[in-house]
Image 1 (cartoon, rainbow, N blue to C red):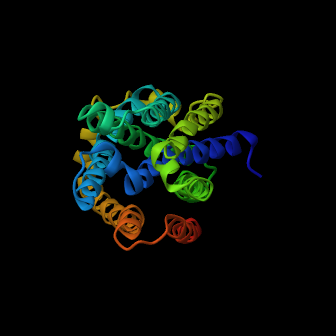
Image 2: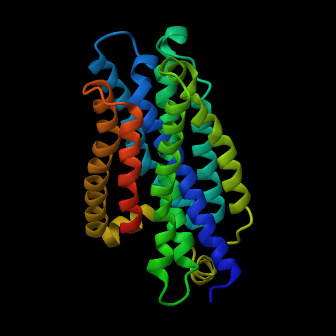
Length: 287
């Protein structure tokens, strides 16, 4: 039997990560479907789509920066505080996208603001994922570390299902013009409610006993990332390459295929979203 505190920690890891990945994925979906024509000058559809995907890429440069910054403070002041901060960073960045003006009304200020908010999303997720995994693993009973570490990883498919499921419903309920004009903003606005849910769960947590014990044993390194690279450079590089290979394939199969399939091949948005929702279940089963 696992104590209630452990189950609450697993729930906090899963829900918080799912909320952050929901935020991350709604941007990817909107970038694939409407951001090119809304946030960039009129031109060839392919050029607008590439510009939208360029803003999508901003988060992947921000994620390692966020992981270093939040990891630094997570090792010094604790997991709980940094996880709350990362969730707020992601939530604020996502919710503000819902009220951004388009290029037609604000000119180049619109895509610049979009890029800044996308950077905030990547920065927040960079701190979230590793911190949530640590929170789960450090609270695992003997022999259960890998299974506890699974909980935050499941946040990725859960967030994807929530994000693309909502876009699928909007595609069914709204006309294409309604979706383009204002419907795409709804998932970003809903993010504010989900972040409040995640904060409510996380604020009830306490620091892990393992973190408290490590502080009692010795102060944390002055620059934790330097310590990691000094002692574990090979493993860090290998893990980074593995993650790049995984997510390059993943976003080609989701964001790129969604944009190319709807705009170039002419598939209905609802059909492609439905196929992706079915496919993501295999990711969840694999985890």
